[in-house]
Image 1 (cartoon, rainbow, N blue to C red):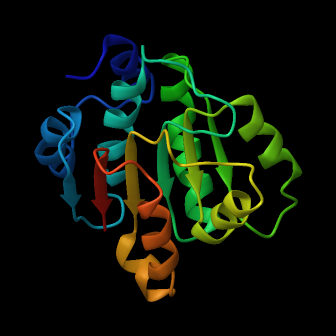
Image 2 (spheres, helix red, strand yellow):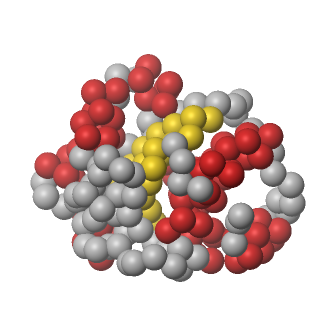
Amino acid sequence: GVRARLSDVLTSLAIHTPTPIQQVTLPDALAGRHVLGRGRTGSGKTLAFLLPVVTRLSGGSRARSGAPRALILAPTRELAAQINTALLPLATAAKLTSRTVFGGVTQKPQVAALLRGVDILVACPGRLEDLIQQGHCTLAAVQITVLDEADHMADLGFLPAVRRLLAQTPPNGQRMLFS
């Protein structure tokens, strides 16, 4: 179910066979169903949600200013950066845009990217809430929401923020939770 352009990217990265978590989650995720995936570090969870996000958004309408089409929440800026590193070749092949937003750095480049329009937003909950409160972003156009390391986000106390953010996404959107 993965498009040829994305398969070519995977081949160029020497990825030829899906991992067990990818085998069991990809069919449902590609079909737009809600998915709960659990696996060890290094098991392939990131591609298990990135491939469906990119596949489902490719060929669709472009992101509007301040209104991402997919949201991936991560507990730390390091994980957000890792996710975006894995996402970039896939998004580029599908002609999609992505951006990370997290605290500890100036928000000016993040705001500028959001205003240009971002298809896939990889964010930490705190900074994203700040940007929404400042009027730079809305989650009203989010079609797919991914919570990565959801258990770690809860351990760090982000659960209230995550609930508030999820409440701002359309109720008929796809949800994927990985831990």
